[in-house]
Amino acid sequence: MPIFAARRPSRVRSSGSASSRGRARADRRRFRSNPHGGGAAGVLRGRFRRGRPHAGDPQVEREGRRYSDKIHTGRSRNEQVSLDTRLWLRDECDRARGLLAGLLRALLDLAGRYPDAVIPGYTHMRRAQAVLWPHYLLAYFEMFARDFERFGEARRRANVLPLGSGALAGSGFPFDREAMARDLDFDSITRNSMDVSGDRDFALDFVYAATVTMVHLSRLAEDWILYSSEEFGWLELGDGVTSGSS
Image (cartoon, rainbow, N blue to C red; front, side, top):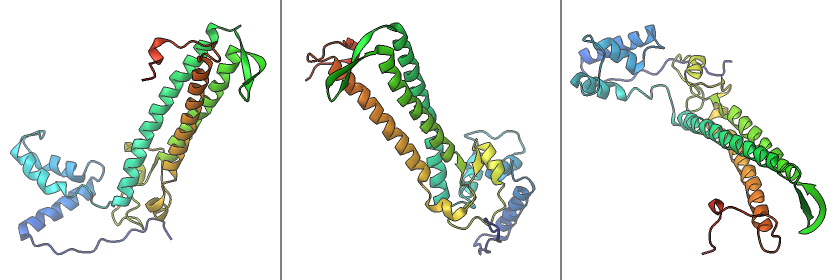
């Protein structure tokens, strides 16, 4: 049994005139003959004989109003919400990875400035062993490198196209899901329409990656707040990253 069972859409009675129904049938035939260049945009291009349509043209406004309601043909809110969330998460994962890459470079640069500096290593807030400054910084490098990888995994799981799933059991329209995935830069398509309607695992993957990253950032910040205090006093923070207490 196919996952996305195709079925003929039920016939809907129209209250329009015979000529308007005739135009609608012609539009459907035009769409079927050129599905990838079709849709409302393709139909509009076919109706403009004077040249390329442009904003402000009265004909653009008339035809735009007529076809705007067809933009959501064959789609459901379930899959559209999933699609929009995946598109947003994909961009946010890329942005987070870009910021982390900058942080990783900064840690390497700071470690390289003082390769022989020796600092105290602490356990339970007491000095335990002497360690090298680069060794301390590279511990955080490892943490943020894992965070970088986690956002990559979250992006991979989010970058799957859900369109074509419909509200629950697929769509009655003959969509080329692989073509849509290529157009929107998705790596693959979802395999089960019922799973799509309730799946938000990919969002939780992002939340987890972001949470762990913030824990690591908070840990680094707290280290430097303590080490720059009067009780420790061996680290000095610049004015650009400090402020008064009130």
